[in-house]
Each structure stands twice: as C-alpha cells, then as structure tokens.
Length: 289
Image (cartoon, rainbow, N blue to C red; front, side):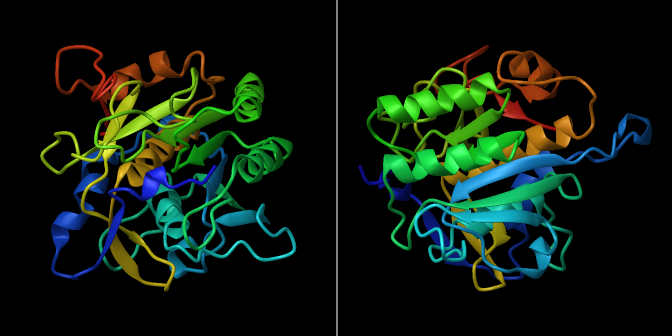
C-alpha cells in the first residue's frame, strides 16, 4: 500500500522574507512567558517518522540518532522536502527569519526515514520504523502521513507502542474532509486536523476522528536545501501538536501517556467550531500561551 494520501493538498511555496504572516502558527501556539519554577530541564525524545531530515543550521545538534528504514545502510536524508520541515516546527532553534520550534531546547529528535523521494512507502517499512523507535525508548512518535486502509500488523505495532506509554501523533490526512487516514484513525492515536490563519478548518483537512486542530496553512519552516519554505497541510499541523506535547512533557514531572493525555492538555485547549468536541476540530486548538 502506497502512502499517497498525505500528498493530496500538501504544498510548498518559496519563502518571501517580507511575509511575516507565515509565522502566525508559532505566535498562536508558543508561550509568551515561562515560569522558571516549573521547568524541569528534562529532555523529551521525539521520533519523526517521515522522509528523513537534511542538515540545517537550525537543527544542529538536535538529531541524536537516525535510521533509514527503507535502505538501512543509507543515511536518512530528506529527498522529499517534508521531514525537515516537520523537524523545524517541532524543535528548530531561534533563527533570523523570526521563528523557533515549539519545543526547542527540550526535544531530542530521532530521525526515522520511512518515505522515499516520491512520498511513498509500505506498511512493513513503517512498522520497522516504529519498532526502532520503541527500542530507542522515545516519548513521542510523530507520523505526518497516512494510509487510506487498515492493516492488522500496522495496528498491532501501534498498540504495542501505546502500551509502552509512547504518545503517537498523526496527521488526519489531506482528504478533503472525506475521511481520516490511518494511523490517525486508530484509538489512542492523537489525530490532528489543520487550521487556516483565521482559525477555521483548512479545506483539505480530514474530518471524522479528530482529537485536536493546529496551524496547517501558510506555515514557515526549515527545508531540505538549508533554507526556509512555506508549507500547507495536516502534516504540519501534526508537528505543532507534537511540539506542544513535547514542550509540556518537558515541563512536568507527571507521567503522561495516551490514557491521561487529554485531561493533561485540557487547560491549554481553546474550543473551536461547534461548542464542545466535534469531528472537525476535535477538542480544539492547543495554545501554550
């Protein structure tokens, strides 16, 4: 089964340095101040299952381990211009273009390449990537892509990761609201839909089993050429949620997993759309500020 779903509505455009609106998502999510008494200085281990991550000055020293699940003897370099952007949203350092990753200075990134240069893969490759992440005792797995159909072996490895206390965040898919892709559709996996700058739903975003909504339109991030590009899609919304969860995990001594995560996040969630939980925005939008 090819991973084509996330490519529908996924878009990149060249960054214009005068386009300050492209950092709206970071401003909306990141805390405006930090109470130093709450800081634990704890590192949070985040596995990014994606197209790999290319070298970038903003990501220097943040990647602690890499694994190419497609070709195990090869480096996990980003040939798609996707995984590098996901990493930037989650943990990039402060830069001259006005943004930094949501969980900068907190995350340790585990770079797991499961998507090729066309954005394709298969269940077994992704399963291998999750198994590697489990063995490395990560805290969070970010999966910014999806399958249209279920697979029992894939579901089992997801269940295994959740049972070990790993939080899994996944993009709902750029499905024009027709469905939610797997693994986002699985119970226990945090499914994320995308928002536009006016905090309404991105038109390509999946609907149905949604847990949270996050910025996913006109998002500036690091690219695989060592520069910056603007990205659109639920892939990038998922990265904002992963970064937010990592930030909060790094600032608490509580033991958080998929069973108590929603109650832990509740104080930081702003309701959107219909009052209460709904199939478009889930519980709402996570704001650390």
